[in-house]
Length: 99
Image 1 (cartoon, rainbow, N blue to C red):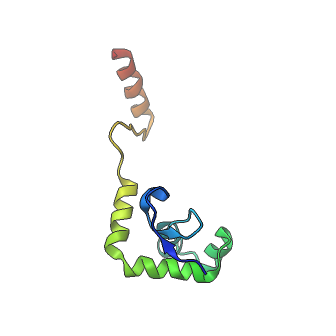
Image 2: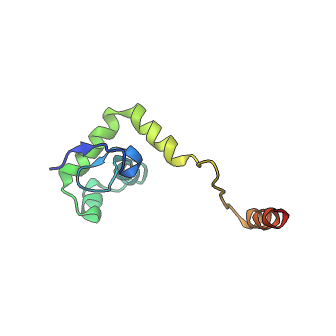
Image 3: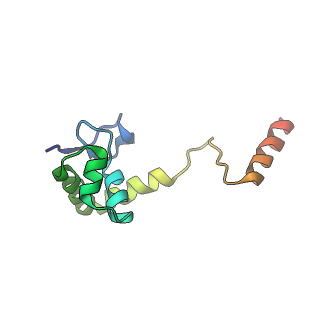
């Protein structure tokens, strides 16, 4: 069974399963938000079921940290443009022509 670790150079410092690039937030998104069974997620990621339960325990034991991880994942860094539809593409093309 693996531990939950946090390292600044992996997954942006988000808590993850030791030795893997699978974050606690990945597990929670699939089980808590997506309604998948822990067993199915363990099989999909090739994890022990205990690792999935440990990640879920960490998720529930650290709600503030997990809200912060989610907020950071949803934010858009400065200098990055997001295309949500065709109108955004037209605006980007127009901006490039003006430069």
